[in-house]
Image (cartoon, rainbow, N blue to C red; front, side, top):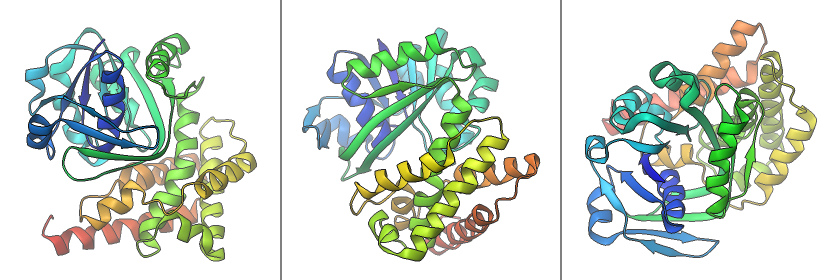
Length: 309
């Protein structure tokens, strides 16, 4: 397939490189790493085996043109630029995967490009960017796919593509539920890593109070999701999220990495939108709301101190 990766940071570069390695024509839209990748190629240092790719890197989506599949892995903080970046790559039959964090992502894509084209890709992966042109993949890599209109046949086609590249894949009958379940990790662990003082996930689990706080955040997230029409087994998800995190070691979630680098945080997509939706549904989420206010304040102060605001 002819594939465009829009937002080739750690996630986009990793999944795009694996798709390219198994024979697909993958073009990467890059910003920070553009010159390095054009000069030296893309290096993936992975727990599944390192490899190097002479990647096709571009700085303008118009140079890529229409493709069969767009993999959008932008930060949710770049959502306002997403339509402009994706539009030049969309042809009559293009499908679009939104591999981004947060709630309400696919709905925005559906408004722009038509809901029949849009598939959510929910990646569970431990991954960080290194020096320009280098991605470090520490663990996991599985992806759950769900179609915006819950068309399982459409989601299955994309899942098969990723499975052929060596990934564990799942097709979810409800994209909405898949999104809320992903938040049951992002809300407790990505945000606590910042608000607890800049700590790795193992530090959260090593502290009894932070562990209890994480559990409370997971329960509140699942409760809001069920009020939003999902059927989440909350008790099972609490144990699953805690167990999965326990295998990660000293992992730095992407929100912590962004905070350390004084970059904008995905506060609105991961915390703000769930809080607003819970309010509409009449579901109290006081702990998530507190995290939202803390993370938003820290984000504002962090960027102001760096002169990025």
